[in-house]
Length: 225
Image 1 (cartoon, helix red, strand yellow):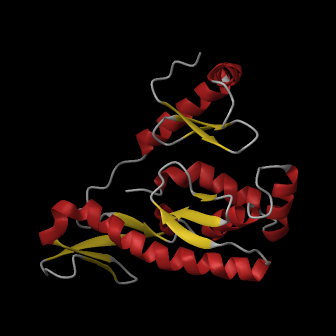
Image 2 (image 1 turned 180 degrees about the vertical axis):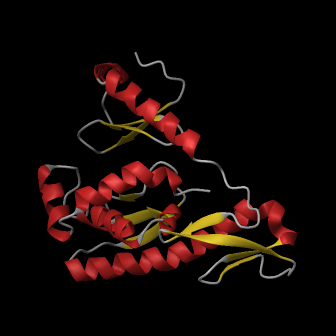
């Protein structure tokens, strides 16, 4: 049995078991609703070498990533580009993005992480919602509604009823990476699992989806505060 101290089992209507290691070094097991724990443990044991390799890679990423300190001149991502932070004596607004820099009131510096997340979430709701509608219309997909999430381990999801959920952290990624995640989830409105038919559908929309997916796997850990 896998004895790593952090393991989370997520059950759904899926047919297969999926394993992933998030950027916090947690093993996420996505399993069918009725699959027994013994069967899950057997699958985990079978893939132990892969799990240990991915855990080591996650640890290296954590050593590279440093949580933000919210000080003058520090760089913050916005749609894949970095912009400096300027601290101002003005009281309001607490934080704004000018297109060239982020401007944070010194009065709110102690709550900067919370305030940055609020700004990112507000901008992500508008940008990601609009882009999802645009790509759905352009490529002939239909979904029921859009939802912004705070997920830390998933970029997006598509419910059985056609609700597309995307994490606010995507607003930090380059536009072409955002488009890949959106197309990925829109494709799930037709193909519910990651079958060959699913990936063929994604490739029809984005012939270079493999390159975009590799970018996300390699640099996705940077899309955070």
